[in-house]
Amino acid sequence: MEKDESLATVASKAPVTSERKILDNLDEKLPKPYLARALVAPDVEHPKGTEGRVNNGMSVLQQHVAFFDRDNDGIIYPWDTYNGLRDIGFGPVSSFILGVLINGTMSYPTLPGWIPNILLPIYIDRIHKAKHGSDSATFDTEGRFMPVNLENVFTKYARTEPGKLTFFEVLRLTEENRVPFDFLGWILAKAEWLVLYSLARDDDGFLSKEAARTCCEGSLFEQYAKMNKGDNKKRK
Image (cartoon, rainbow, N blue to C red; front, side, top):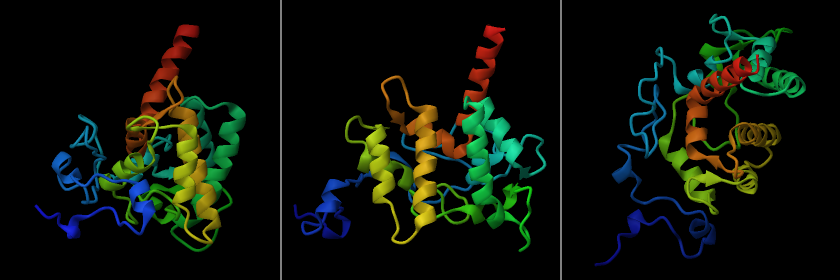
């Protein structure tokens, strides 16, 4: 039976399409994988997202950052970011540096007006404005979750172990997703993936797809905060 070229995922004269493979039967494993999800972050193993997770009507991108809204006022200040990072296990120095960088780069795009705010607040209801280029496109421009793009990240770059990324594979995906002349996007994309890797890598040095998925919806931060709180209680 002749193969339908309209469904081909590899072009013989474009070796990169063979090198970075994607699933050609993804829709058989996940319903409508190309449909942007507003409220949940599904993948092949979790087609309905995280079971029992309450989204509170927020987009997946809003859920991703809501953990850091310490007083639930819809605004994340640098000290909120710092405290959230400390809760999930980062040290005081790295939390301070990351807090300044995160709020310093994301505050202005989310402001409701044109005048900068020296307190560097991030407005959660406008967090989609802070989306940058050179990323994996796991979120669309409105903050919805794109299941196909998360699956593609791990299909293309997880060469050592299926569904898991090594440190060098994380570096590779950030390099190969770079958009020309998008210097800020290059830095932010690499920083985001490396911070996630440093937080969620397992004992063998792998970053799992499940860690990336739950990071997208924010539940990963909640899990680590609970674990660290439990460790603190034990030490006390």
